[in-house]
Each structure stands twice: as C-alpha cells, then as structure tokens.
Length: 188
Image (cartoon, rainbow, N blue to C red; front, side):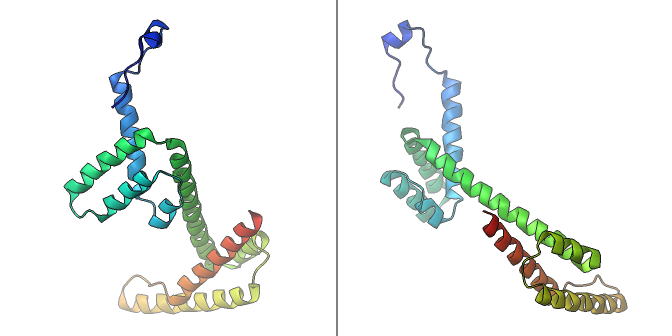
C-alpha cells in the first residue's frame, strides 16, 4: 500500500500522484514483470534482484494453472513496486537489443545467400564487405548450392510443383551467418 502524503508535503504544494497515474505505474511494472518472465531462466538469474522477487519468478514458472499464474503475476507486480525497476529495465533492454541484433543478422544472412546464389555480382559484393574467411570453401559451397538449386528446379518443373530448397542452401546460410557473426565479434 502506498503511503499518504504528509501534511508538510501538502502544505509545500506538492500534489500527490493521481489515482490514474498510480494505476499506470502499476500496469507498467506488471508489464515489466511479464517481459522479465519471457527471458530465459539463465538470463533472469543474472539480473540483480531481491531473493523474494527471484523466488516469486521461480514460483510463477512452477504453477500449472492460469489462475495461479495470474495471482502470482499480481504478487510479482506488488514486489516490483518496492524494487528499483531501473536495473531490471536495463537488463530487459539489453536482452531485447541482443535479440534484435540476432534477428537482423539472420535477415542479412538470408539476403546475402539469395544475392550470392543469384549471380557472381553478389559474390563480389560479399568479398568486398567480408574479405576475411575461408573464401575457397565458400566458393565451392556456392557452386554446389547453385547446382543443387538447378536440379531442384528441373524436378519441380517436371512435377508441376514449387522448387524445394536443398541441404546446401541451408548450409550456405549457416556458413554466411557464421562469418558475419565472427566479423561482428571482431568489430565489437
């Protein structure tokens, strides 16, 4: 329960927050708690918080029914009111930035793969951006992936179906993503 403003605070002209403002703050803390529950357990363990709040998060994951989880979430919100939410929010923001970066890397690797398989211009552009790496092995993989794609297109045309992506198509994606991740690690 929130404390009431003292008579000195009221006399000094400080207005207490409105009930609506308090409700918005509580809902924001509840949303923070929900977002923290979406984090992997290992990452949640690395965030500094009180033992009581950590136990409440563990209990939430242990409860099987939705009603028990709803009540536990309300309890987590109550505990968050007495915690400093800034470190929790910073940890959540850092996790979100990392997820966004990983997603961006995946999309970039997909675009590079499609561009490289489309023609040699894509391969030259790749070499300009990522000169380091095992270019000989990548070049062989690209050649084999193109051959595999052509064969898949021929088979699909005969059957009247859409061509399927093969094993080498996926392997090329993995190799490109690994080179991009290694380059990111070096630049950081």
